[in-house]
Image (cartoon, rainbow, N blue to C red; front, side):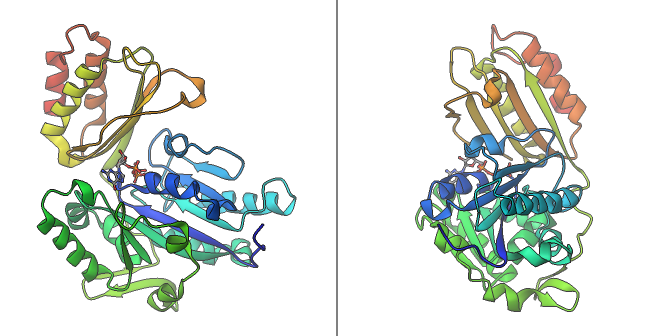
Length: 355
Ligand SMILES: Nc1nc2c(ncn2[C@@H]2O[C@H](COP(=O)(O)OP(=O)(O)OP(=O)(O)O)[C@@H](O)[C@H]2O)c(=O)[nH]1
């Protein structure tokens, strides 16, 4: 077992919505090098799914829910770290030697890190570790241009993991994304997911010297590049962004669902920042995980078991400036109308148009 560090490093895994944080975390946690790791997962949305997708649930896996770790659940983050520390002291959880926080895709990483420094208890037991930011090669450039959360996540990174380059049809777009990242953060080490296959050591090795020079200021953390200046204070983020959940307790027809989702994304893809869920599909015994990020829909994946043993479909939507009630009604009009002809009802189509 690794020796207990005087200050346990808290690594932050961040990156915009759907950029591949959970996929990376799940792969890394399979590495024995990360056996002594406590994991905190924070999700934006009424229900959390990522901890089920990571497929490791034990006492050192903590879900911070119902808000974003940089704002509403900052206190909850501090409480969770204090509790983990106290349980470790009392031998109630395995003696972890590092913590990884997977933030929401909308989190501002600066307040999260400053929580470690400013909390009177935490600062005696924990220290900021490495910040790893995932950047989606397909949607990343537009996200950097549109969402300040995304630029702040890229600017603070020690390691930038570029995901989905395998899906990037236009390599010129990928080069533009890499140039933009260089503007924001010339010092970060860049790793291509898939081809470089980063291991735990490459990502969470204890090399924080880079950020020590980049982020120290009298007031705490800051980052200053020619194009972006950000400080430790949170800014008013994700004000028009909302999240809603739909739950259906009978099997859904895949074709019909696909048509409904295609219609939604054709109309509003840019503003459907994230769709993710676990579906109970007609003709399938096992649950199926679905993921969409703006116009991009990833291939569905069969899971081994139903989370919590409950056989229901749950979909989380995170949308920017769309009418969540209309979209919910549209989904329900479609789902509740039955799936015999697998066509969205006219009412459902109109609700999508007007959302
Ligand atoms: N082709 C491809 N798909 C990827 C890659 N990385 C992630 N994905 C897919 O992208 C989708 C979203 O991945 P997640 O890991 O859930 O993304 P996330 O950042 O955790 O999402 P949020 O927690 O909702 O912000 C899933 O369908 C993944 O399988 C990659 O490098 N290539």
